[in-house]
Image 1: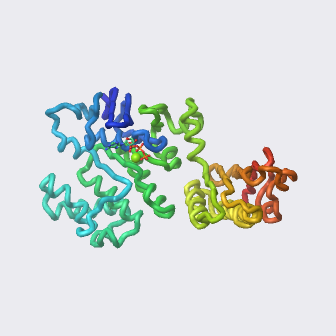
Image 2 (image 1 turned 120 degrees about the vertical axis):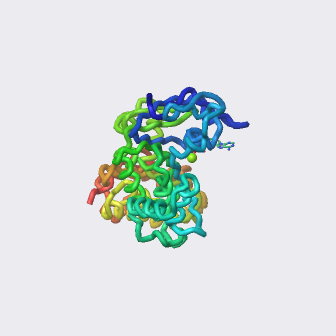
Image 3 (image 1 turned 90 degrees about the vertical axis):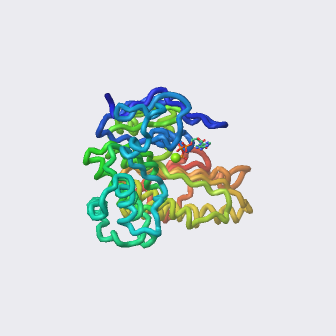
Length: 368
Ligand SMILES: Nc1ncnc2c1ncn2[C@@H]1O[C@H](COP(=O)(O)OP(=O)(O)OP(=O)(O)O)[C@@H](O)[C@H]1O
Ligand SMILES: [Mg+2]
């Protein structure tokens, strides 16, 4: 029997039914990445599995035990499942080590010395042994999340449930947490990870579940799901998350935020400094030096510009789709020329410019 069996799981709230009919069998040692658009029940599914949420109908069987049966010892079953959330939920009035020692001492009646040794071992595993006596607030976001992961392992669980463990972190902290997660995956832990980190999904998971419409809409190996998705919804989603999108609807938009988001995307794609730099220069040149001034010059306060950057991992095949059709409407001189924004700076950064229609241009970015 599989370690986790989910049969016709349904969860309805008064106004939405995020899980309509979820079915899955998960074997011991499998690492499952759960992906999908917001609101498709990914968190609900994890919360149903450890019964933080009561399913409306269906079955969840963990290690042969029916999680929904009235006589099931939920406390005992939950000890088999470590859970990590987006926000670390560490206690600030306790030391880092004490956060980890709490569950073994309270629930297993483990002697303090033994719990301390165990905490040190777990902290060592996530590379934070020297922070045992710090307060959580003295740590970076990435370090705190690593402590949270160590804590989730404190009862030596059979299953780890991680709900977007990296999405509250900035890019420098994401990598260190992903490294710890990949390490756990390699060691053979059974993991269910809701994540937007496609690199983790690809490299560390045995299978990916794409959730949509209240179901596991498509599942398969990382290669199947990420490279050859069969269903159009999966394809659209993958295509979207692998790119970077930014809309500019006002000439007084937040350009610092744009740059920060772009940097984050480049880091996530493991582009390398030079490639990331090229993308950032191109976007800034186009937006800040050309498009926005052009909009201001024409008295257009709400220009409706769209940027879509796609990059393969390591910065291969980088393209930027620039949609400035909002600026060329109504017989504007820009429309007449049908010309892309192609200043000397831009031309130094791209290999080729493809004008799809007036105001819709694809730049093929140089790999430097
Ligand atoms: N306790 C609740 N009461 C009512 N509705 C809820 C509750 N929890 C979740 N929902 C709703 O269920 C749906 C699925 O929520 P869920 O958090 O599982 O989505 P998700 O896939 O994790 O989304 P995200 O990617 O944004 O985290 C949403 O429409 C949400 O508003
Ligand atoms: Mg969620």
